Image (cartoon, rainbow, N blue to C red; front, top):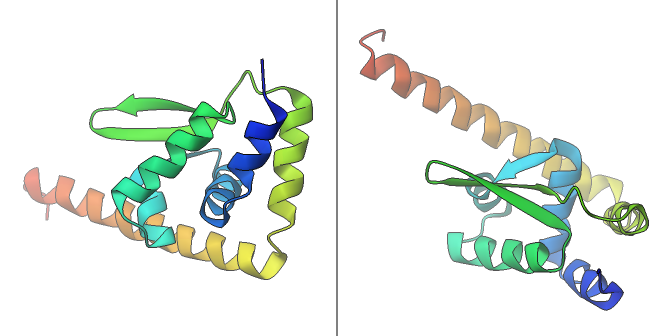
Length: 124
């Protein structure tokens, strides 16, 4: 059972709202991506994500040492609408900056990861 107050509390923090905005756009994000884009520490990112997880908004999955977050499949439709409306309150300019920074961070991270793979495989 979802607690409406818990969902609203989870969305009331600017950092958590930015995290939810990025997850809305990219469907699933890694903690390290949120750290880089939002310029926060791993502990702060994890604390906020745990808050969103406990509110029922997010679900997580582990892949090796990385943890990825996405919207919970059990999130009722009405709560999903609330989340999307809250994200819209951020404003187009701030959303555009967040999305641009995320795209740049992900491209840089992916190109670095592929470079490391090629170097370790003797392809570079």
